Amino acid sequence: MAMNKVEICGVNTSELPVIKSANMRGMLEKIQSGDTECREKFIKGNLRLVLSVIQRFNSRNEPVDDLFQIGCVGLIKAIDNFDLSLNVKFSTYAVPMIIGEIRRYLRDNNSIRVSRSMKDTAYKALQAREKLTALNAKEPTVSEIAGEIGVDKEDIVFALESIQEPVSLFEPVFNDGGDAIYVVDQIKDEKNIDERWIEKITLEESIKNLSKRERLILEMRFYKGKTQMEVAEEIGISQAQVSRLEKSALSQIKKTY
Image (tube, one colour):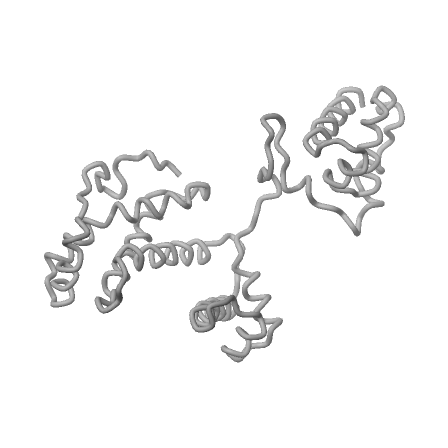
């Protein structure tokens, strides 16, 4: 997402005005009295707030213009629903509204399709969690959430898991300045250990030139299905070293096989 864009959705972000905190309440009172001109000024004066929020989603690779528009929807909802009797700053109320609107957009546009009924259950569960947290000053259990909305615990778990964002197997989880360690490196195969690709081809000649440690790492990784972390702990080196040795060994095999 190109967060260094100056113009987003036709708006020159470098020229956006800023409303002073002292003027916020007076403008909100005018807005709630039906002053449409003041409402437009207030929206424009808070667009920098939207910009600051969408930066949190910088790693999502979503079009910045789309996120900005969705963020503006959240801002407008915050303006229309703000309660002047609350002893909070407008930004304190608006930021969660903007974030929530963007997250709903991202969930609804998820590449993995989830049924509407399951999404509805998930959203009800999230609302119940917020309500119970505010009421009891602690995070509710799944059973408490289920009781609040009248849904089985299992359905709550499935629904909440269904709206989680998928993670790429090749997303880096660690980098010590050298080779990155990816999600796929952390996955252990419990079911198909005997069917790993390394057992389907004849490698005896190819692995003769590998060091003893490299052969041991390949055996533990591909024959025994261990994760890099498990290998590292067993032979007494870092996971980053296991990753480098594994990749080096596989590279040598590819060249000689």
